[in-house]
Image 1 (tube, rainbow, N blue to C red):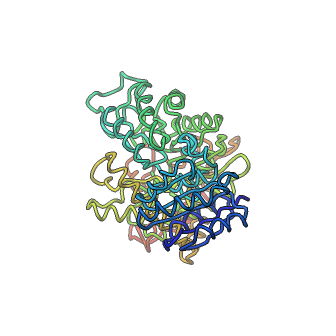
Image 2: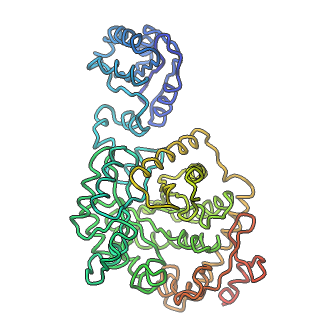
Length: 544
């Protein structure tokens, strides 16, 4: 284990930055020795010798002129250690940091507080070579997650009505080092009719996102991201011609991961040309295709039920089915997507209970060939219109999400209720998210241990098992696995085992569900508003 010794030099008594640096060092596997405030050059050098330090951290946050003199004297006294290969880093205010940079060749790194934690951790984990931009910012999701831990990687949706404006926006976001992943928001024709120009409607160009119409468009968007912190890119998996799109995404934007639903993006929600059963077949093919190439896969499934006011039980059941299908299709790195605030009126404790239940259900699926990554996000439909209230909602939602220790946070911009996010909006949202994340990591609170949450988790898991059994009971002889069989899954929606109030009068669903928010949870109710037990709701399918 390498050793780092650090303290505030001379008459400087400000040690918060030193303390934080050593915390990051510990997380990166270093043995740390904190000397505290007002450390003389002689003592710092002697302790470094005695402890056989590999790295010495120096801080000074007072007058730049005094710092310049003190640092020059320190560098002269520490030259022997420097010549022996001990590395030195400096941290302080920007004016003092500028003085430290003038000591050419002495400090291995100089930091002024503007750096993201991952920059420091990249240095601590890799040494000087890690300061190269291509090594600070890995170009696969798994490597980026490992490098940033315990901080989650950040993504945000972005796509403006023209290629030119989107290119300019990506450049700004990348240069600001705001995100780790930019999720390209493409318009509906790009999702459904990319390879079918005869079906495209010129009057809807740019509706809902950037109108990409060729591989060259995607290459231009990717080129725009090759600066700043070199963010990864990903986009919708489409609603038709799935494999052709997947091949093009890998070639043009080095897609960070695949995101695809199980039951949606078809005729049931009006976003694609296939029936529910047909789309499940194609979605499973896409999962398998990406799994064979070791590219992570996210099933953005449960929130589609939540946004249609489904019960918490249906929400959690769909999340389990997503993970089950992903594993069955050979996915190795599975991203469990958990959208909070869907429906928007959920209580925070009951919302959290849903997510804890999801994780408890999918964790047993993990093995050496299947890993679950946690991704959280704020509810798409939950933002208030008033800007300051929206900002507060973003921060408080992400703070709660951090209870789950997510590896990925999908930031949903605070402007969502008013307009699609501009690059400036994205950068502002990322800054708010980063502050909420830092506060949560420092506070290290775990709300999930609350008894009311744990009781709700147990109740949800028991009722999910009833839903799964009802689906299994639909299968006749010869069905190897009802939970992955497209015909059985489509039938579960048609019959209402999986249902939501907003599916009323939908030709592909039962649309019989009634739900209400009771005690902060979304539950199935009867015509009088009284809760309906899942055993009663599913009685016809459980008694087989």
